[in-house]
Length: 335
Image 1 (cartoon, rainbow, N blue to C red):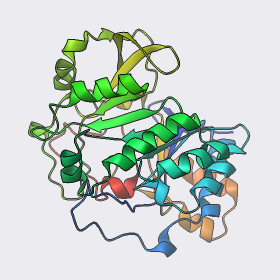
Image 2: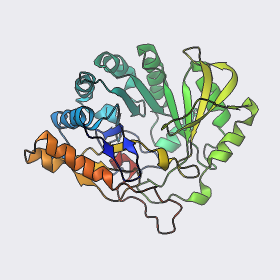
Image 3: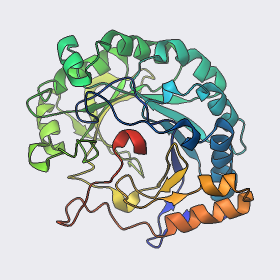
Image 4: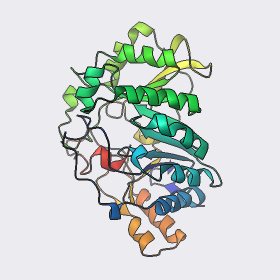
């Protein structure tokens, strides 16, 4: 086994697999109201092709964690079977899924039975009117039921991902944390990143990690002495509270823009059409789908993946005046 190492000594052991670019929400910071031109079905990896690439990553490249993303991965018809196939691998990877929560009420049980370990659910507001304005859909109750179903199915710790936007929902941080504490969920705030299809992201209006922490000052957060390792979130303890497992309650902040963690990045990304991306903000991709469909053996696919990751840059370069936003939006890259 030869791992996915780059020239800076980082080794990718965390694979993010986008299963579709489609989504059933139209979040204002992600895509326009009318949606996007979706990927043609024939360009999308088949279930067997997804399974083969995950197997190569785990058995030949040292990947230990697999996270299924989208678009909205719950829209992938073969999702349960893909999870089951990944759970059967040896060594068995840790299996996670990032979702908007719509449909999770129905699928949480089958996914857990198939081998899924945990979920992250995106939730930016608890206000139904704001939710509809942000997502252009009236589906907040579906998301809340999905969260409850995930917890009941044992997909724990259930994590919530929240993006705060200035003048829209930046006043909700304390209420969102209270909601998470009351239900035993783990909350992660994420700085808004330049990955919107409209290319309207503006650093000067972004709610920063420092501002998020300041808004949570009434909770008296304490530094978490447990090392974050390669995890993207910096975490703080919430005094007087415990999580669903009886451990000290924590809240996290992912400061991708103002507190980048590129030096510890251990991720490799696979788009729904079989392209390897060495960084969320990369502008170049390497085509594994063509190798699969041309009949390449596993060893050749694995070596192409290693080459793709070897040229990873030191950082995402958002602070560089020459920074250019990726051509693909977040929904087509996968979180």
